[in-house]
Amino acid sequence: MADDAPKPPTERSELKRIMADLEMIQFETGSDIRRYTETVRKLSRALAVELEFSAQELEGALRELPPGDGGSRLATRRKARSVARHLRRAAEGQRVVGVEAVRTWGSMLKHFDYLVKRKKARKPIDLSA
Image 1 (cartoon, rainbow, N blue to C red):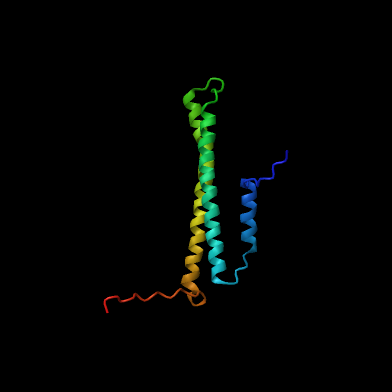
Image 2: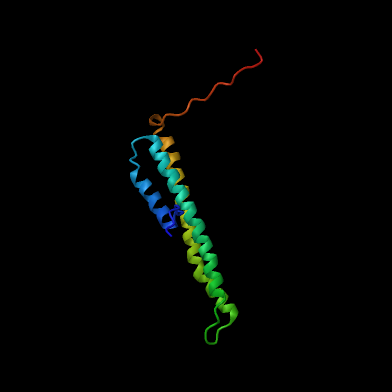
């Protein structure tokens, strides 16, 4: 019996879709630049969270290993924390990527504001008249 129900997207297929979306953006308009920077921010946030969770899982798994010859449980825990620290640093790096992407848009507004069409502020309606 064949199951024709659509399967939920896998992480890899979702990543490929996001990367394809980024590659398609041409930087022809301000909205293109904004969409690009927002997509990079979302992607970097998701990756930062994944790296942080992976660091916790890795540290937990390594802490449960028996100590090596002549080693103590305390030394094993210290080593596990040291190994997981690299993934935590990678997560922090991804957070920086997201922040810098947002700063790109802010810099665009600062230096090329004449190219970006701003939405006009709506005038409040005076209902007391």
